[in-house]
Structure formats: structure tokens, C-alpha cells
Length: 605
Image (cartoon, rainbow, N blue to C red):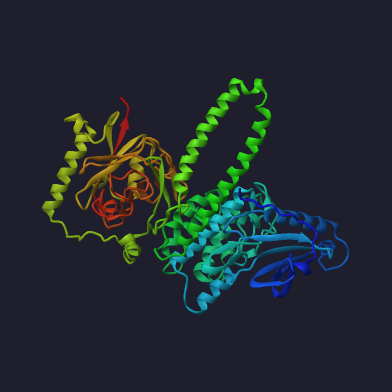
């Protein structure tokens, strides 16, 4: 349930609150700050609210403020209906409407929580004091907006007016989307609406457009958070980008924000279908959150919201089902009907499974949050534990930051030529043994069901992502072996063919995927069947789980690869995701360079 019910009664606004002064306004009404009154008409001065007043009789007037314009009146009434509908959305990242009502003075009143300032003022204040927003702070803001926008889209709306004016900043720098006055309901619309400097090309061209127009606007907002303005080379960024030349636009972000370049390019792609979806953007920005970010507190807030919404939905449906069952199942014929009995049995089974999952996460403090980056769900013995997701950045940026959870990387001593030769001999021995499935079958860590053919060897074909994709894409099931600089041999199997995604990356569910550590002789299945068993990247080689194994472009030159078991695949016994052992178990270090990679196709006999 992401909706609330508003009564829309006729009330006397003077008895509801006391206006203190104007704080904004525009073509759709004026906004004031005010004190609410209690039942005894006394002012509640512990907090203020925002009051938006719209005079309905003004809807009839033409652009000059006189006469009757029936078309304008109809459009304004439709806009008001959409705004009333959107007010029912309930989400921590959408402005909370406390009340909405009509007055005898022909006014439509919306009462909402009062923000400290809008996002534009927030950015300008920070820039004026030379406290420019960091990569982590911008990522936190973007993630919060994305959570709210996801709710808006999933409830059938296109916002159409995402901008720095329509995002409000509250205590702890939490942000909320506001002003859905021109939101459109449905999958597509064609009305040219929104702030001019934030309009997507398809909106400017009066073409049919959908929710991807909001993604474009959000891309412009990302640029605003970085620069504090909407101009590029002395002209509006929107005009510069809205040119159908190539897949990506050529706008270079300012120094210090290179981490956003790739996602910015895709968000402002000229063609709507080339822009990333909300989940892809959330996955991207979460990797840029640092340990001190306020986003960790927001995560607690958002999870409490989702648990509460789920609990309320279950309560309502349970009551409704009980009422209907009590009535209809009194009839002996219906009660003995086999199909009904089967439905009841299946429903009870699913309900008990859901109860086990929910209760294991909901005990005591509702949910246990880790102090790292994000949340992944690991199911062991019917118990859900929320695990952290660590930032995944380019290594120069990562190495400047403190290590999360007290993790200290191993002392790295340069390897001698003889040591590297021994590492490669051991790699050859372990790989050949498992590829050929030779020796004592009980000593094999992985048992491959089919003939293995070499597709890719990094030392021969190159360590770049494009080399990997040229050799490995669309080759069916594969098994990949990695030799880290620490002499550890590990890898993973996937039944899905590797592909180069059209966007930045694409995550996939693969119930047959697993990872392994040949040097230690262990295999690791998935904690549960989840949507990121493997990830296909344009600019990386391959990835298993969220952070379990990530092999990046030119991984032989820099310590940029990452392996941290437990984010999606089961760690060894007594190893917890985020601790030192989980960081070093697979590759010998949380971050590492690569000495060799081999990928084999696995074709069934």
C-alpha cells in the first residue's frame, strides 16, 4: 500500500491554521507557512506546516485574468484531479500531504509538511560557502529521489516536472519530491509540460513520451547538483544535449566528479529507450556512498516504511478474507469443493512461508542494519539477515577512503618472478584438472556437465572488457577461472551466455550459477535465487553476485578488481559478509589485480 485516503471535505481554513507568511507560489496557487490549530482552536507552535491555496474560480479566467475560458477551466480541473490523486501517494521520499479540503470561499487547500528549503536553495547555499557537495552526498540525494520516483512510476504517474525547484530538503538533508500538479496518469502523454531547462527532447518535440522523460530530467538535475547551474558552454545544457547525434552526448563533467560521467551520459541519451531504468541507477549510485553518509539513516527509514506498508496490507486483506470465508464457506457444497480445498491448502502454504521470512526479519528491532553500503538478503536456516553492500568505485578513488568495517588490506609485498611462475603452474594444474575432470572424482571441487572448450585466455587475447566480450559473448554456459596477484585460483559458473548490454549493465537471475575457490577446495551456491546471480557489463569483464566477484577492465594493470564473498553466494562456515575473512577468502585481498583469466564454454555431451 503506497496510498493514503484523503476526505476532501468542506472546511473553514481559518479554524484549521493561522497563516504566517508566503514562501512561494506560481501559476497553480500560492504557498504559505502556517501554524495548525488544535481542537480547541489553540495554535500548535511546536512545528509549522505548508499551506497551498488555489482559488478555483480563477480557473475560468483567460491568460489576461478576465473573461471565461472554458478550455482553460477544463484543463485546470483535470490538473486538479490529477494533483488530488497524486496526493494519496505515501512514501518517505514524496512530500507528505497532511490534509486536503475545499473551503466555502471557493479555495482548494493542501496542507503538507514544511521543508527547510528547496534543493536549488540548498545547492546555492552550499556553493556560496564553498562546501561543495561530495560524490557521496550527491549519490545520497539521487538515491532518495529515485526511491520516490519509483513509487510515482509504479503507481502509474509520470511526474513531468522533476527539477531543483520541485525537490525539498528536510532535517538531516533528507529530500522529498513535491508538486505533482502537472503529473500525468498513464503510460504515455504528449502534452509539452515541465520546466523548460529540464524537458526531455521528446517533450520539446511534442512526441508521445513516457516515464523515461523523468529520467532525462533527473540527469539534468544530477548536472545541477554537480555544478550549481543548468548551463554548459554558456548555453542551456538541455539545448546542448537535445541533439540526435550518437548514442551518448559529449558533455564532460567537472573535475572531481568523474564517477558520474557514465551514468550521466546514459540518463541524457537522446533516445528514451537507451536511458537506464530506476533499478540500474540505484545500483550505480549505491556504490558511491561512503561510510559517513546520511543515506544509511535513510535506509532504516525506508525499510520501516516498507515493513509497515506490508503489515497494513496483510492486515486489511486478512480481515477481508476472513469475512468472506466466514460467509461463503458455511455452505457445505462450497466447503467440500476440491478446487476450493486445493486453493486453501496452497494459500496456507505460501502464507506460512511468507510469515517465516517476514518474522525472521521483523523480530525485536524490526531489522538489523549493517553500517556499510546497502542491503542484500541472505537466507540461511529460514532466517534473513540484512547484509552490507560496499561501495564499488574506481580504485584511485577507493584507496583514498578509509576501509569499511575496520577492514585492513594485507601487507602487499611485490612478488618475485619465481613466485609468479609458481602461481601460474598451480593455476594450470588446478584448471586443467577441473576442465578435463581428471583424477579422483571426489577431489574435484566442481563437477562440470559437459565438454569444455577454451574461449578466452587473458594473457593471449588481452585483459580489456572488449577482448572478453569478443570471445565469450553468446557462447552458452561458461566456467571462468581467475588467478589473482596473491596466487589464489577462483571463479564461477553460469548457465547464461555472456552478453554486452545496451545500457551500462544488466543483472540476471540464474538458479544454476555458483562460485568456487579452487586453492581452498570450496564451492559456494547462492544464498537464495536472486536477481543478480550474474551481471553483464559493457565496460567490465564479468561479475557474480553484488560484490562476490567483480573483474574489471584492464584488471592486470591496477588493483581494481573486487571479491568479497557473502553478498549473494554463501560464505564458508563462521564467515560473515563484511569481515576480514570474507574480504580475503576468494582472491587473497578485497581489491586485487589479475595475473590470468581463462573462460571455457561448457557444452553438454
